[in-house]
Length: 115
Length: 117
Image (tube, rainbow over all chains, first blue to last red):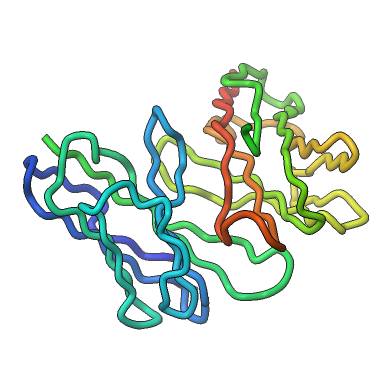
């Protein structure tokens, strides 16, 4: 089975440019998560969706960040305008809705560098 | 207060020895899940093992086992017969099922494990 698929794997962009990160969750999964990983702050939950509806976006750092999930198989995380402090690895993850374990599976991450 | 605490920033272990990575957690939720993930230098997050708060037995997955001590709120990962390929960052994480926290995972800061030949 295909895992969580993210693109691009690596992106280098100039400050002020718009960045769009894409994610395809595992088929049949109800929840989709966007995480950010930095050396200073570790892994942080930015936003998550349940059945394509944003449930909690309290982790989104600023209005420059936005996320959408137009259908069950696609989500985007957009940064506009980007800043050097946005440089990080952005992970998308998904899981099924079920009481108990519900292991969250991660994509390989999108490595963003803003110069 | 931190919800997940990993007190070992780094560890060096000889190949073939057993390894214990510490994790303590803090929650008032009676129902929760504890997870361990491995992050090799290539960067992906690999799920290793899961323990539910109501599970009676400690979880095991191949060479991985979770030493779950509920009263002490600890969920240590044990890797038996370590291999060079086990060198990676290891993250402990928790999901609180009822009330309180988000539906996602709260992660610890991680332990950088290096296996020496």
